[in-house]
Image (cartoon, rainbow, N blue to C red; front, side, top):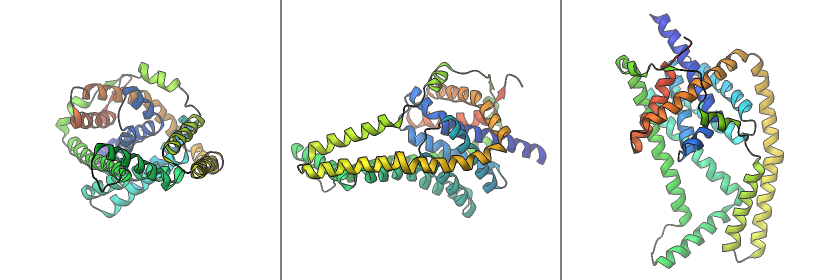
Length: 338
C-alpha cells in the first residue's frame, strides 16, 4: 500500500513540475489568448499553488522543490530565451520561500504566510522597478496629476494619488494571495476525499489546440519595443507636468542610462552566468526534460478544458473552479495511449 502511495506521489510530483514549467515558459501566451486580467497575479498564484502541492506530496521538501526548480528554470530558458533575470529571480524566490515556510510552520499556517510573501514580492518588484527607472519624480508626477483632477472635482483629500494607486495595487495582490491560500487548502482537502476524484480522471489526447499552436509560433519581440514605450511614456508624463526643462532632461537621460545598463550590461551578464550553470545541470536531466515536454500537449488541453468548464461560473467561483480543475485534472488525467 505504501509503495503504491509512493508511486502516485512520484507521478504527482512529475506532473506538477511539468505544469509549473509550462506556466513559467508559456502560460503567458495562453493568458493573452484567454484575455485573462491580472495575468501576473494568476501566473504567480499558479506557481505558489504548485510549490505548495509539491511540498504536500513530497517526503523531502528541499530535494523535491529544488530539483523541480532547476527543471523549471532550464525549460524556461529553452522555451523563453528572452526572459529577463527578474523572471528567474521571482521564480527562485517563490521556491525558496515555500521551502522555508513549510519547514518552520504547520502546513495550514505556512500556506497563508507563503502565499502572502511570495505574491506580494511580485507586486513590490514591479513598484521598485518603476522607482529605479524614474526615481521619486515618477510618483511626484502622478501626485501632481491627481491633485489637478481633485481640484477640478472640488474634492478635498489628504491621500496622495501615488499612495492611492500603490494601496489599490498592493491591496489587490494581498487579497489575491489570501484567495490563493484558500484555493491551496481547498484543493488538498478535495483530493483527500477519493470520491471527489471520480469525475476528474479524464482521458486527454495528445493534440494541440489551435490557439496554443498559433501563440507558440509567435516569437517574442525584442525588448527594444518595450524600452521605447517606457521612454515615450516618461517623456509624455514629464513633458506634461514638469515645468523645469533641465529636470525633465535629467530624468530622461537617467532612465536611458539605467535601461542601457540593465538590458545591455547587467542583465545579459547575469543571464549568461545562469545559463552556464543550468547547462551543466541540463546534461544529467535530459530524460526529465524530455518527459516535461512530452506532457506539455496534455497539460495545454487540460488548461483549455478547465477554463471552458469554469466559464459556467462567475467571479471568484470561476477562478476557484479553473484553478482547482487545472490542478486536479493535471494530477489524475489518463492519456489515450495508456
